[in-house]
Image (cartoon, rainbow, N blue to C red; front, side):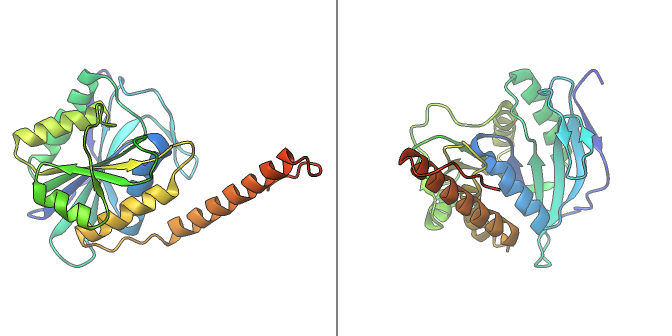
Length: 252
């Protein structure tokens, strides 16, 4: 493989469906990837295409089954369970593309793939260290979409010198703007020292209501509780060590 390519894996079968595109990638706290994973599992998405490039960051992806694969952008389709003609198209990658040319190549292929579909909106989900408040920040090309998201608990994004998005996302934004496709950007504020499950839950809660689709967070809720207990136990351990109270114990 000498150039960036798009492989069609199966027919998406979308026909005249109204498609909402959601883009997620790596970032602090991997919030966007957690959101994408929960959506994919809850709505039983199907992978229909992939973008490969020798110029993507050379990371090796390991599946839950232990199968290794090259870095890629996955394109998956999830149907809304309400029987409507709406569908989600998820673009996901667990790496950041910093090179402008690589981002443009990938975006051109993705937009070409989407050109035959009825795309009504694109939503870009990312994370960054903004104010350490843990809030969800939003912006959009249409004020009414911003108002809807704010009513659901988000805050407006303002005065950010650098948006926490990679070159694939920025290239997609430009091409979508030229095609007059409405866009929204959702930024999860996170410290990002560990997978930020709680921040992902906040994004999902807003997104679920915004899209009017139920997203099952049962497994995520269990992991959030486990993480909370782990952090509490770790905090108690360090406090005990600082006080010089007894031999160290181990968390297992």
